Length: 420
Image 1 (cartoon, helix red, strand yellow):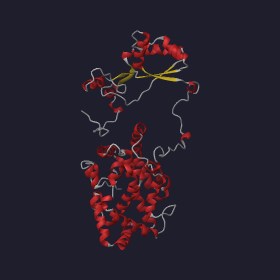
Image 2 (cartoon, one colour):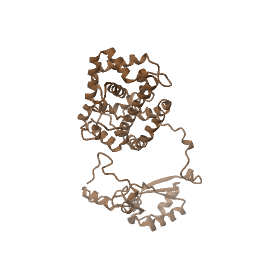
Image 3 (tube, one colour):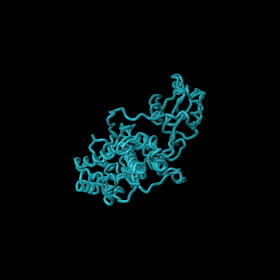
Image 4 (tube, helix red, strand yellow):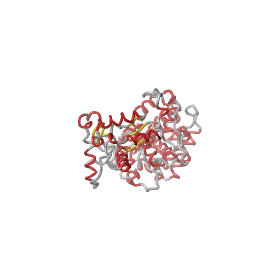
């Protein structure tokens, strides 16, 4: 397997010389190494103008996975149609454009893409074709600077690619649609021009007969990593509108999610059908709400058991049947201290940096919670809260007593993070 070749121009522009992408023997480095994919994406985005599309680690990993799969397609095509093998294709190119022109271009490929500099001419030609396919891919536009083949001089490059296309046109077709090799490699992007993830789905659905067990091995080894990065990228899409430019589809016309088969997914929670459909839930940031109540009732209301019955009666009159309290848990002291060190002497600890999942002492603790629960229940109000188990402070009881519950990394999980 061979990794996505990063151009010499890109390595210089984005200062990638100290990353694993410069290792000549590196394989599947971006699709299997989450930290490396993030480092490369961060390096690219640091040099981009604000109006340029941002590079996302998940898309970078997906593009490399497609690149590896395309290498496998070239091998399978040669088995089915021996004339399509790269050594024979290279001979045909020499016969069309001449030995000097062909050799000069392939030498330039090795110079611009250092990962292929030690490979024979046939393998350089294969890499040239796969890089060209990647450059043509609309969904890869935010990543194109990494693989840009413009330094190969487009007229010479296009002449060689055209010679390959002319040669392949006279060969038997490959795959279920009997396409030439280059057209087969272009098929995923034509089916899903705005989504690299959609292209991977296309490969999985359409090329299983062609690629067999080796495709499963590639996907099994890397899809977990892509899923992890994909979740992070989805958060960016929700917050900022995403990193891609939407390609030819335009704004708001990207890939629709495929929800087929979800009806068969087993439920992992109780249906609560006796009350959930009729639940009317109101959310309150607990400390903010207590401050508002103090102002409204003109007395100090700082704990849960001090919430007036009149306020609960008011919620019930409004038709509210559920009260979701946010920020109930005991917070990390380290979080508050770090905020003070950073210049905010009146800062409170973050509600997402916890000491323990117990009701906070300053809210009255568990007894105050039990008092509120009883009074709320008498009025038909259910109480709810939320938890995210990994939102713990560095000094939390869980971290200290159960370090095995957490994943530890020797380096920051994101390039912009620093540990001091």
